[in-house]
Image (tube, rainbow, N blue to C red; front, side, top):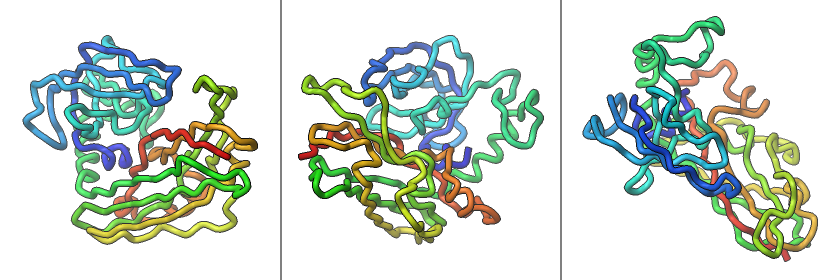
Length: 273
């Protein structure tokens, strides 16, 4: 929940009124939903009472018109908005004044009142760190690796403890494309635990206005890249899931001082020659 808030520009309750599904066979294809904003809890108060367009990955379960009231976590994307994370965790159901999902601290058949959840979530809305990554569009098979540059920028007003990409469960994935540009292999192959790295830096402190850069060379074999061709590479840092290394890194620490937001997914076609 902390990661979702940190990735969001606006936190509001509202209702989906219409959906335009995307193509689930295309990983970068978005679904779009028209959402009525009933109440803004964090962010631009002028959105209250308006209808906005919210994007969502078509590859996951799209937002449904009949889903009822929901708590939305969205980030700005031009004139539209997007769920703060591409899974449906960016839109959570509300029932009888409660957030109708299980959260730690309650028995599995009980939920927290929405007002209590919002009181907790507002505490996480101040810091602001953004992750980005650059993937080269060409790589040499003889080089044996794909070099990816990650950059974190702290645009907030306070320093934050920062988990590095190897602390996140999901990271870099790839599959081969055929001559027609369509998927030629059955499954993504990639690094989710960064097993190829023998040692990992601990959490870093990123001061307000600061920038942190790290370059990681991912072995081509770890991405299932064993021959020349074109591969679709996906990059993401899942804010709600940490690797075992990530869990160890935050254990015993003050999580309110950590930036737990991740990097929403994007895709780059890489030619390997």
